Every structure is written in structure tokens, then in C-alpha cells.
Image (tube, rainbow, N blue to C red):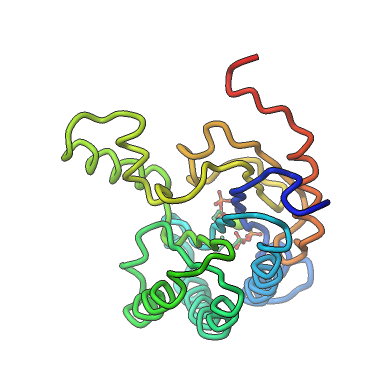
Length: 228
Ligand code: IPE
Ligand code: IPE
Ligand code: MG
């Protein structure tokens, strides 16, 4: 597919299936998460070649705190490691990092790392990687509604302007891996007219080629937005 021929500016992915990937191989769940990070790395490198403006990845939901403490701490550790190991590559590739969700309640050293990475990549013009951390769409909408109400009457535009995604392009394509067909509290408002794409591929097995397949299907969808 030629550069941007698919027309998707903003693609979001619910990266699901790390646990099942590990289970199938009789490996600890942590190994599934670790391989999941490898899949992320390959996709981030493909943002520009694929002609996408913004790639939004659901990394940790506000409901994922319900998981056992050791799994939560494995995930935080992987995030810490990912930022440390990949930040220079982001800077080299001119990728801007963005966080959606309330990351300020994460462990303090991670918050510091994240804020450093945000500052160092703020000028990036080669695409945006938005990572959803401690993100819950319903919580985001409540926060946004309160902020919009504090400024006056709530309208579609005034509420949208307070969402964590306010500075991102409209969501075009929402992908979920692992065969689950639900949104799990991700981008509920933003997905109003997004195209949805579900695949059985488990996240650690998801490649740039799989994303290209999704983009090809997206290019062939007819978006109507209620018109005709
Ligand atoms: C997705 O994989 C990663 C996160 C939610 C952090 P899961 O850990 O949900 O994997 P499954 O759904 O149990 O296979
Ligand atoms: C959604 O996956 C959250 C992330 C991918 C980060 P989950 O595995 O947490 O979703 P449910 O529990 O199956 O709905
Ligand atoms: Mg899951």
C-alpha cells in the first residue's frame, strides 16, 4: 500500500491476548507481556512508514489494577524498561510521546520517567505514539464533563476539548486483538464513528503485516457518518 493510501490518520489498538499467548506455550504470563512489548516496538517503528499520524495503544486500563499485585508490578517494570530503552529511538525517529489516562498515580519514578520522555519528545513531528496508562474512558468522560461544566455549558465541542485526546486527530480505526469483541472502557466517546476491526491474533503475534491488513480493510470500508 502506498504511503497513507489507506487514509487512516489515527489508529488505536487494544493490545489483548498476552496471557493466552503465554498459556499456550506453558510460559509465565510475564513472558507474554514481555513479548507483547516486542510487538509494540515493531509497530512504533512502522508509524511513519505506514503513513499514520497517531497510534494509540491501550497498555494499562483503570480496571487492570484488579490483577494480582505481581502482574501489575511486572507490567510497570516493563513500562519502565520500555521508556528507558526506546526513548532515544523515539527522539531519533522524531516520534512524539503522549499519555492518555491518569498516569500521575503510577509509581513515582515512572511518573518522573514519563514526564522526562514527554518533555524530550514534545517537538516530535514524525508521528505521535499515544499510550493509554491507567486509562478508563468513562472516567475520562466524567473528568471532561466536570471540566467543561466549570467553564460553562457542556456542548459536544466543549466536552471533547477536555478529553485526554483533545489534541489528537479523530479516531479512524480501532483494532482489538485476541478474539475478544468488546471495548473494555477504551475510547468510548472517540469511537463514535471509528471503524472497528477485530482479529483473533494474540497480541505478541501481531505484526506490522497484520496492521497493514487492517488498514487495507479500513481503506475498503464506506464511512457514512449517518448520511448517505
Ligand atoms: C493484554 O493481555 C495486556 C494487558 C491487559 C496489560 P492480557 O494480559 O489481557 O492477556 P489475556 O487477555 O489474559 O490473554
Ligand atoms: C483491555 O484488555 C486492556 C488492555 C489491553 C490494556 P483486558 O484484558 O484488560 O480486557 P477485558 O478484561 O478482557 O475486558
Ligand atoms: Mg486480556
